[in-house]
Image (cartoon, rainbow, N blue to C red; front, side, top):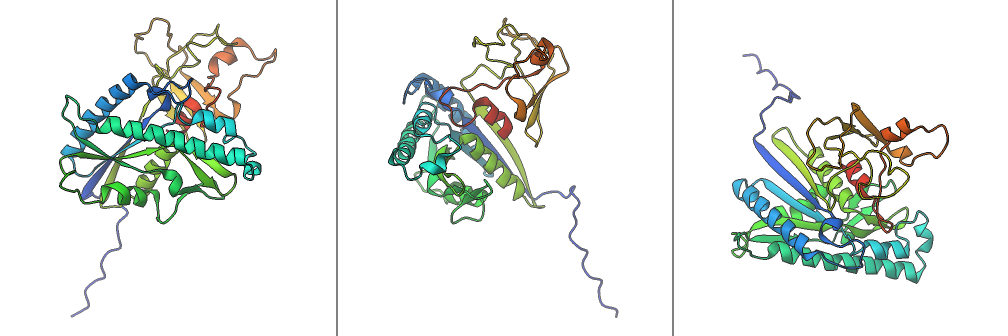
Length: 336
């Protein structure tokens, strides 16, 4: 009899039904949402407790409902890191020239110690048993021990093939112990000071960490395994606005618009899409034009006579605290 036909080549048909689905939820807990960012190493205990209860309830429901649910909480530094990083010059472009300076190196260590102190406080709050009876176990990792920026500005993880492999090895692949089997497990990370092949030392921000983890899981999915990724940013602000609603600056005469829907592009631009919902904040007026566009290369207004008011209204400013070294709200939107 004739030989059997060869098996068909693997199909690239995206309609193939996956055999399993992994749900990844990344929560970026902004430093401003849990600390007083204007005062050195000052925790906002009330805000942290509210965030912890919110996360405990959400995490418990997700992980108990689906064993393939991955929950990663990343917190920023707030007043536990930004100020010391600013003082020692960790945000300066020429920081590699300071690698021989003891003041710079001591500042890097102070920044790490400070944010690790906050990490311990966040961990204690998340693991605290409250009236909701939710039990959470945090797996804490300090990324500065393994994560690096290479010559291309990309993130490498020492000893691991990918960021996803690191996350799975440090939290989700471990067999639960008898003491932790009844608890919801989450990986708790934070922004950190890391080695940088180009700049010597750099800040690996919580926003960048969220981006790298999401990318790693998205790129490592297979035909048989579907991956659903959700990223949530918890901030200390009332929302994203076209300008600082509490600020007094050159644009104070322009209407302050809350931007509820933002569409991003891979080239660093984002568009705020028109929203017809009514505002529950009286002093916020919604955009009347179809969209407002922000371009990363032109974030500052030009002060010249040809720059009329209409152009200024279409330009969205991006502000940050004077001691912020990770990009403020602009960094979050670009990461998204």
